[in-house]
Length: 196
Image (cartoon, rainbow, N blue to C red; front, top):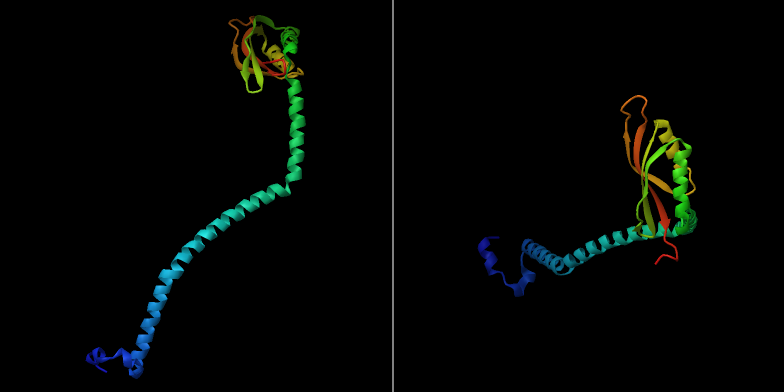
């Protein structure tokens, strides 16, 4: 078959075309239908499918997280109750307004019992922080290194929470002189109903 005879083909008489041309025409028609179907039907569905698959993975991860929490819900509730009890006992370690003066006496007594000489014992003003107030106490004491250690240990053993900050040790100038320690102790007071 010659190429010039291809232009003479009549679509109305396609049943009489040679087998090779019929096969080629059917193949081209199938490719055209498949391409149009893909472009107009399948392409958008593939994009929607990929989006849905990504959303599915996100939802699965969310489900796994929530499932893990749900499985451990009883343990979380128990842990929450333990934390409430622990928090309550810690609040009891914070002095109330009426107990702050006694705590200051306990701190100074701890220093005196351990042989320290107080050059400065100055409680500062309370500073509110969230649900509690912070009361700084500036101290300057003279004594030996071991006396300082025993003092800090005694303050740590008090039934109320006291923390030590800004420690500065000044060495003795002569062998017979004692060291000087400047330190800020902080105690904390829980705001109770009487605070406004």
